[in-house]
Image 1: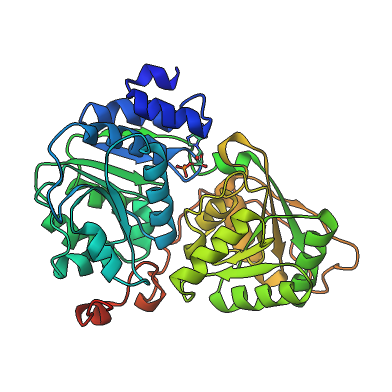
Image 2: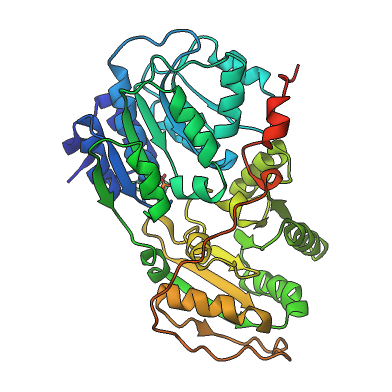
Length: 419
Ligand code: AMP
């Protein structure tokens, strides 16, 4: 099946050809006809499956017909959990819609609100937004939803993890009852199903790439190492393997800063990316990384979620995540769109519990490699791959000041537009 078989307009097919895509991905094959047919959709699909084009392409086509957008109105709203994902989705909307006369905008917290109010003044066909800033804009009469036709919730599971449920409910209450709803989530947990109940209407349910397929096409290795030798080991791995573009995960913002400084001192261009960095600093770090001016991007899970970096060859887990599913999300950054990927994890003795949880989730014992000179003094216990079914751990909701894309509620209600 080709893109030409999907009833997409010539303008969209041209944009797809410009991108160099030849065949639709499985999620695109399922989602595009359903959305074009006006159906609600519940899709289990992770980043890396082509899900963004899966909803953006039919959305653009649907919006090509229909009434012209009125001032401050929005015809399609795409909600995302993080600023980075909002920016990336907006970029996709612009790229796929480049031959169409549709207007789009993106709004998220952490940057001035005034330019966003201006961008909404004449109305936009597609608005990509994080929930907190969208509510701010609504309170300031900058956006209205009477013309809304389609709602997309992207990475709904992460929105719930990040504590956006109340904001989502507030947004839903502002939208017209009659609309098309598309819900994308990496997994369909009970919480997501509960949210979906009041949201979608007779949806088509599609599912691609279950949680561990990503893990299967990424070559994974762990290096048992003492905690205090991790910085030296990652520096050596980057230098010896001549990695030019490596995404490194840490558990905390503090560690991201510390490691980034360490790498810089060792002559490896690096930048940290996390929720305490200003939006401009984050956007610049990501752009420099994509351009190859920064070799190592050191990120926390929330900041890295949804980052679309084409064919990232190398991911390093400097520290294992507390929640095993995050390991799968992390290594999903590499080996994208069919390319082979490589992920290494530096694991100290303290992390044996996290490691066991990951191996149980991916049903795979990870290959261990000890580098000469880095033999751990505190030995990492051997793997005992537990065949008991994996029981997901409920991730802790982030504290409000840790949430990306949104300011804490008490600040928000007192917020004035930046002038
Ligand atoms: P997503 O899952 O939306 O984050 O997309 C993952 C990556 O796959 C992005 O870099 C897209 O540009 C790319 N992509 C999306 N659709 C296709 C396709 N049909 N063929 C090849 N690459 C694609």
